[in-house]
Image (cartoon, rainbow, N blue to C red; front, side, top):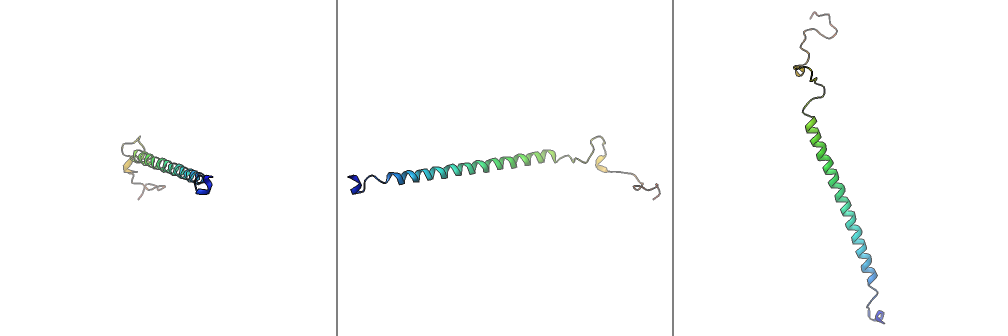
Length: 82
């Protein structure tokens, strides 16, 4: 007879609310993990770019004066007369 005086029947609503809160918490944790992973990937990408960006890939390491470019007085395809 407890249902006549308002006791009892409220347990289902409280349980549903708790389940919704748990789902929301899990969703927030998944979002935080995704953001953390993305941030770590960006940081690692930046570190890789700083390491590799110091040496231009077009410059030959075989020549000591590769940064000076071609120091020839002739034009490309020209006969040597300027």
